[in-house]
Image 1: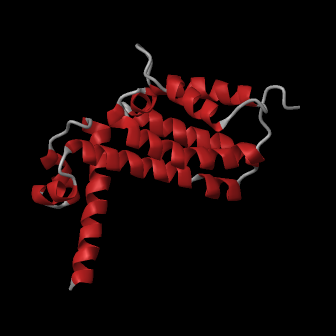
Image 2: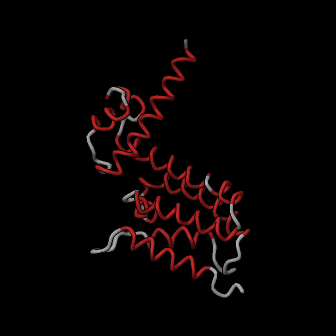
Image 3: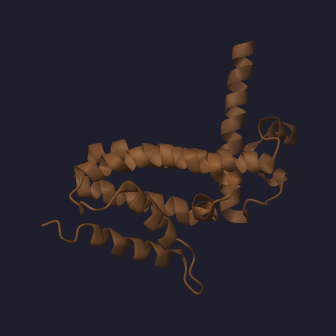
Length: 182
């Protein structure tokens, strides 16, 4: 019986995280809890049992997205030439930053409240990107941190421009990574 409860709890947690991801994308992180629980098919009590504070839920969704982006490096490397794998991973990272309002700001801020998220981000993303960089032919003076910071900065919304503008700027940046590599 305990195993069944654990399996139910895992399913509920997964449903809540998926629902929160979708709701945050359309309604923002301040969306009503009821909107999230309705979408997940669970009660509000289940939400608060797993995530006593809204910030706990937001961080869990972001960490899950960070983990998925970092994990994409291996399959991209296995299925593509090194430069293509790196470019596709950077595109995925760009989408992560562009669709998670506030993620870039949280990662760049000195706010102590964001410290754990920052640490998780760099612990997961840096090794994934280092592996991709090591295989690709790019400028030798570029580090994983350079790419992570540049994409985050280029993905900030620009007044009067949509998210495609940030993707365009990142594409220009990626082209520049190969400059001078013969």
